[in-house]
Image 1: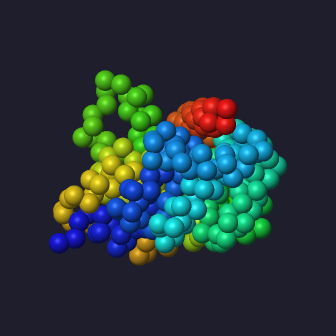
Image 2: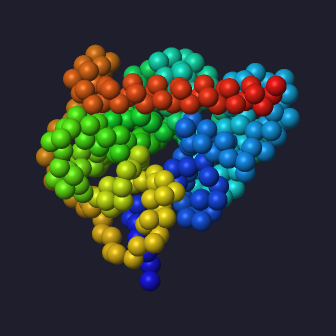
Image 3: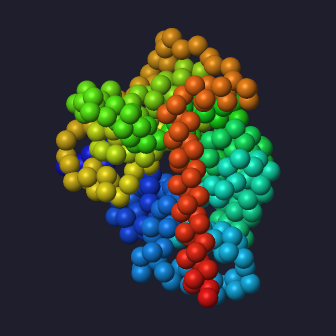
Length: 318
């Protein structure tokens, strides 16, 4: 009998949201995503420490930032030996508001992968969905460097990414849920905000329907899940990136899953196109308290973990 993970694979591409190789081997995702927090978590485990030590030996004269890039490529290459599809590697979040620096770092990462014999078709460069990041992605996509736009919480970000013709967006389901739950305080009723009524699920569903209605080719990958119900409520989304814990939960359950998102008749959806330029993007995001706060919070968190990674590298080099 197939389990829920097997059922989900029938209509959604399953992606591992982890830097843990063993989890990927166990759950057999198609793709994998990483970020500074996941790499930090992995590198603090003894089993992955040799990757850092080998990176330092291979590049003894590299700066801390250069060593971090080489470490990201080493993780990415190992992941590509496990998964049949793509790996996402993130540009340093400290560059989130610098278009030119983001472009240069993305080109550098792709170049490192290609020196290791990895095709750029299997690499997605992750970039924060700021206006500057989206503009960088527009240029990179035209160069054949595929981008995964992360820290995406709003329709304004999604439409701007679609206009830039990026490869993939990663709307964050769980973090949207977290914001609404925190803001509701004692008025939050979990049962009333579960499944299709979950605010994170509703946000991704709205983006999904908009993209299908307007024949937008950018892939949608739901991310940052807090519970299995959120995943099931988005079954049928193009991709879902799922933590090892929730992959295990799906693997251990045999209840049926049906597609929750439907693309059979998108032309029948009554959804008007949204015009986006820099001014309207910034205004729409400003009007969205959740989107504004979670984007800023997410960048700060990734920066903090990048700084911790820098310190681990420096200590290992000492």
